[in-house]
Image 1: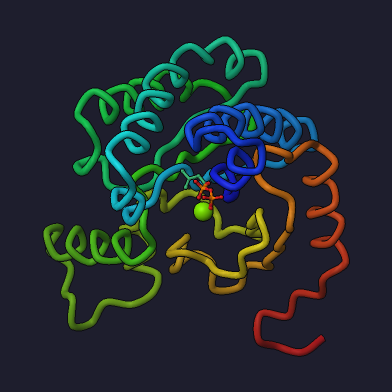
Image 2 (image 1 turned 90 degrees about the vertical axis):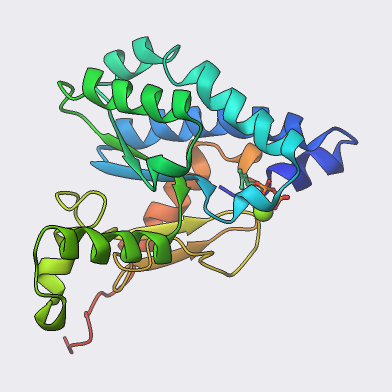
Length: 219
Ligand code: IPE
Ligand code: MG
């Protein structure tokens, strides 16, 4: 979900205003995705590298999460949304880690779309934590295979992503789902995240529907 800062700058507003608008866009897109019948939607909210930003900006984003995570409970209920977390909870402020954990438990009963909040998430960090968890669980690291390592990722029950979307015209993955994205289709859009509407999501899905997925094979 890139482009919040540029969206604000273009309006002569503070970057934080961009994050506020970005949050509204996230809610629009979650609703649209749920209505389209998408089963899993991962939102890259805050990366392991985003801590490099100013403490004002980091504090504002953490504040937004703290303020809105629970207050949207009715929205999750209405849309049968189950929340999940990807990332290292250990590196998050304790009250936010606890709130996410609570919300994951409270929404576990909802059987609609699963929304995975990638928060303090890094692809390399996830792989390293998985290796460490495997070692701690007594797996033989020397003979570790892909299936076993996959089972130690943050959400092993969630299928690999079919489509990865990046907004705001950058052509990078920025450490997102490195392990899981091996055969994902990518969609890059110039539209800044706060400007995203259902239409942008439909365009991305339509593009995906016209791809031919071969997984390294031939058709
Ligand atoms: C994405 O928007 C939001 C987060 C990473 C939290 P940016 O804040 O990266 O927006 P730009 O890239 O500065 O426009
Ligand atoms: Mg950015």
